[in-house]
Image 1 (cartoon, one colour):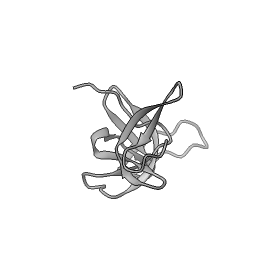
Image 2 (tube, rainbow, N blue to C red):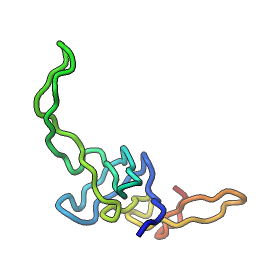
Image 3 (cartoon, rainbow, N blue to C red):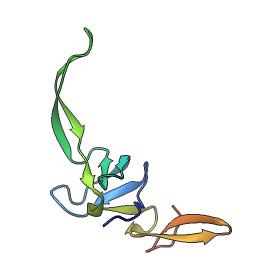
Image 4 (tube, one colour):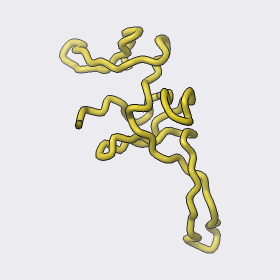
Length: 104
């Protein structure tokens, strides 16, 4: 089931399900084709990195792994964890937190 992804890059989100539940972070990347997001400091995984140059250090690096979009919710500044809605602000369509009504 395809739907519009309401979470965007640089949004602050909280993980609401899974082993990383309760952690908050900023969205680094949105992967709309897989319905996943990459959140800074959340869902860390190890990846073997190859040396690319003489100065570059190879080895095992910790990187953020994708997490499904259904497992995160947006965090408003005043309202906390909330769903996202859309409304018209004059002639412009804006996102807002459903809990507190603040524009994102």
